[in-house]
Every structure is written in C-alpha cells, then in structure tokens.
Length: 568
Image (cartoon, rainbow, N blue to C red; front, side, top):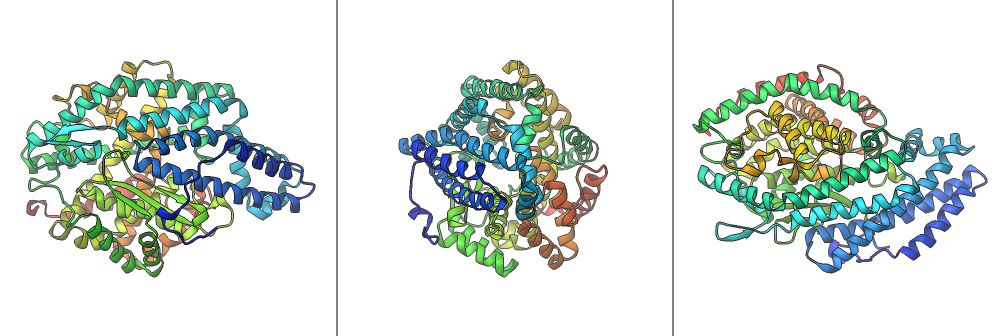
C-alpha cells in the first residue's frame, strides 16, 4: 500500500462484513491453534497488520463523516462501521483469551512486554460476545447525538450558525451580544433537550445492562476497564477530586472576582465569564492559512523532529480546521496507521480556541508521529489521561511563540490561557462526579440528572448564574459535553493531564531545553506503560498523591501575578 498519499487520495472503502468475518475467522483460527510461541507470534503479527488496515478504513470514514454529517454516503458508511466495530472487538477478545491463558504466555510477554498481556487481561473483563448487540446500539446512539449537535442551525446576527460559530458571539465585548447569543444557544438546547436527554437515558441503561451481564454492580467499574485503567480506581479519583476542591476551587473563585472587577460587572451571568478583558478577548492575528503558517514557524523553532512533523501534516492534507455547515462540533486528533499519519479536525471560529487547536491537537499528533513506528499497535498511543499530557503540555511550550499567533494580544492570551487552564479543573471534576452519580443511579429521570448536575456545579463552580437562560438554569449544561455521551469517565483524564502539564509549564519556565527534551522522551514512550508507570519513568509527579495538585498550582499563581491586567 502506498504510504505517501495525501488525505484526499486515501481510498474510501466501506468495510464488508462477510469479507471481514471470513478473514478474521481465519486469522483467529491460526492464532488459537498455534502449537508454540513462534507460530502464535507470527499469527499475531498478521492479525495486527489486518487490524491496522481495518482501523485505517474506519478512521477515514469517521473523518469524512465528521466533516460532512449531512452526506448520506458517509452516514451510511459510518453506520456500517458502528455495526462492525463490536464484531472486531469480539475477534480481539478471542485472541486475548487464548494468549492470556496460553502455556507459552511467558514467551509472549518476553516478546511483546508484560503490559500488553495486562491490557488483554483488562479487555477480557470489559467484553463478551453477549454484549455485542448493546455495543452496536451504543455506537448508533452516539452517532445520533453527534448528528443533532452537528446539524444545529441557529439564526443569529442575520446568519445561520452552528454551535461552534455561535460560540464566537458568546465572547463578544458587548454584554448584550453575549446575552443574546447565550439565549439563542439556550433556546436551541431547550428545543432539543428532550431528544438529547432521551439518547442519554438509553445510553445509560444500555451501559448498565452491559455491566450487569458481565457481572458488575454497575457501569463504573466496566467504564474504567474500557478506558484501560489498570493502575487506578474510582476511589483514587474521588481523593483526587477532593484535592481540586480544596486547593483549586478557592484559587478560581479569586480569579473570577478579579475578572469581574476588571470588567466592571456587578451581577455576572455565566456567559460574562467568557470575556476576560474589557477590551475584548485575545483574537488571532489571522485566519486558517495565516495561523497554520505561524504553527509551522513554531514547530520549526522547537526542534527538527517537530518541524518535520508539521511539514508532514501540511504536505499530506492532514488538517481540516474551519467550521462550516454540516460539520460536527468540537475538535479531535485521530490517525491512519496504514499511512502512519495523524489527522487534526477542528472548527475554527475566529477565537483563541483556534490557536489552542494547533497546539493542543498538535501535541496529540506530534506524539503519534514520534511513536508511529512502534511495532506493537497497542503501544503506539497511551491511555487517554497520558495522551492529554502531550496535548496540554504543548500549549505551554507554545507560549514563547504567541506574538506570531496573536500580535499585540500575545500577553492577553498567555494570561487568559493560564487562567482558563486552572479554572478548567473544577469543571472537569464536576463532569466526573456527575458521571459517577449517573451510573450509580441508572434509573434516575432526566430531571433528576439535571438537578444533580446543578447541585454539583453549584459546589465546584458557584460563580455560574443562569438568570436569562432557563434551560441551562435547570442543570442541562452537560448536554453539550460530547464526552459524557461518547466516552464515559474520560473527562477526568483532561484534569489529570492538566496537573502533569502544569509541571512541564513550571519546568519550561526554568529551563526550556531540559523541559523540551523530557517532553520529547515522554512522547516517544507512546503507550508502552500504564499511566502511573509512565509518570514514574519520566519523573512526573503522581496527581493522586495528596499535595501534588497544590505543588503544581502554587508557582503558576505567582506567574499570574506578573501580568499587569490593567494594561489589557
């Protein structure tokens, strides 16, 4: 297969279930009938090669569908992927069962590493043939949710906008514009609340049913296993949330007070916090072409490897960045293993978030680029909380280059970026605590879920008020958080990674060369180790250890004090 194609040249191939089933049956049969380790290893290598091809095809379809959700051909292809992916998991499960119980397991551990077998052990606890129907339905429901959000068409300012495009108005200098945009979004959410709430209710009951079929009390433990969490549990996460509540929430409350004082707003609403400065939020100095050019300058300056990486991204059309009608919301990084290529998807809307994409998703893509030649596919990408360290740390390594992205707004951006990063932590634990409650109480009604979210939100982000947005006032903010629907329990990973990224930020301020070298080493580790081992091997403090959060935050509070916000 040609490796040096541009994305537009990638073949669009919809997986054929009969062909895949026949091929997988043969590959699995060869592995489970292996008479010795040598034969088994050869079979695993063939399986990996075929899996890479199937995953590449599925990733191409997902990207095309994300970019054009209204395209019937892409939607049909995505529906087929949703049906097939649980079947592939079933074949992987059969291989894992054989390998983990094989008499030559020690030889396989020596060849592939003990962690791969530990991952297989965890995957066996998270999957069984009997839950395939539920997994297929889960995929369909997640796609339904994405279609609703991606299909949003909101009349505002004489235009028809999607949710990402409307977000720009939520940061406007004029409070009346922010309010009007918030009301427009709230109205749209109110119109779709029942449909979105119904999708989530079905997802919760499906997941609860799967968990009980597999012998778990509820979905929580299964959810952790599905995320590959082999070295920490819900109790440790609860202790970590307590650190955020104790050491970060008070810091955020002070920052919010300073922000509103500077803005001269006495009765702030939730949308007022979207505006950091009276003169307006930092805005990029150009649009997509300009920003991509500045990103190339930044990655070139950081190092030869990062320069080659971003040149590769540009040359191979691996960036789809600007918001448009029919494109699903949000941003992500995915990859096509057959072409050893990462891909960045986003929705540029003229805000500082556009630059964040080029650093955050760029960090993900850079890690993949550095790890793409790792022979064991499972070791290319680490678990999700580890992945987010790469992305969030890159945001801070980008600081010295902000003048290129923002011009005169560079210092404004750095101050607001750091505030946002710190202030994100309480929101992150809000989403996490909410999800734990949901799956411990799967039969709660939609209204009860919203009431619980409102209660948790009031504890961790007490500054938020929704006086003019009645839908959000009920506690429905979570309906727009895609991770709650598609990736349960994932969201806490962002906060864990943020605490690790803060450590890189602090080290970078002291010694950039040393910090960058450490970061590149972390990226090259890929997913060879579980989260806590990865931290240990790269000398990053463990967020679950009490006091780690405070140690990471304290130096950054001092950094914030170096900015003269009166000049902004």
